[in-house]
Length: 292
Ligand SMILES: C[S@@+](CC[C@H](N)C(=O)[O-])C[C@H]1O[C@@H](n2cnc3c(N)ncnc32)[C@H](O)[C@@H]1O
Image 1: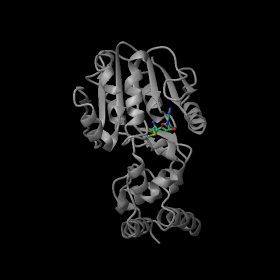
Image 2 (image 1 turned 60 degrees about the vertical axis):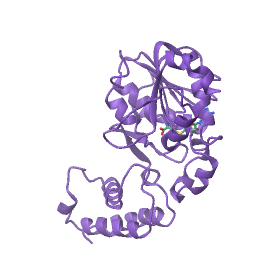
Image 3 (image 1 turned 180 degrees about the vertical axis):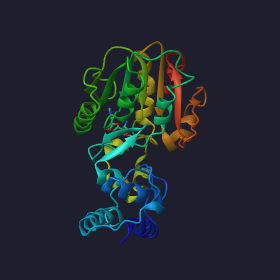
């Protein structure tokens, strides 16, 4: 079979199977292209139409195995490939941590402008998972020191592999901590994509999400318990002109309703995504009582 025909057929099967495309690609065709190109090592500059070469029997077998795991077992593509792309960088990706997909990638590429007045020297990626946000920030701000913190030892092991992959051992470190409990010092930027999905919502998520660690998704109190805890404490870990950037995804409306008196700055994205806000240290101090 020609490679392009395999891709089109795979995309049609995925569309018929009603899969969820919420882990980095938007459509069945995008995902078929992503899986086949990565598996066969095809350059993404090549258009699908040009792929008229025949698959070898070995290639077809390995693609068939991938296809069965994606369609029948509903395994996210990034776990099948063992890697993911985030903010233009490659990361090792496996079920120890969530698949990277935060819109915060776009903020990093834009150097958090216009919210950040100067390049941050000390950065904390709180709830770091496999470390994609903090590592991408370290690459964007080459003079920065970055701490990747998570409660999960598995996530931190994966984050350490990603630090090594990017040759950042001198500037990026990991720390196991229940939110701020085992952290000290002050940061110019705290960036966080914490768990923010309520128990009811977790139960309704597509099967793809069941392959991800539940600890990365679930937060009590309508999804707001962990974000509010971060809001209560963040000022104590920020420098005078420091900034907190946090994703709360589709819990944004619930958070805004709960914090109606707080001027949360909801950020806009050109590449899609929502539910990310910024607050300065001064605002976190000013409105601290609202976070209780
Ligand atoms: C939504 S995932 C985000 C992972 C990564 N930052 C990303 O964007 O792909 C949330 C992470 O928070 C971690 N986490 C959950 N509860 C935590 C806690 N109390 N303290 C620190 N990290 C926690 C989970 O282990 C998980 O890695």
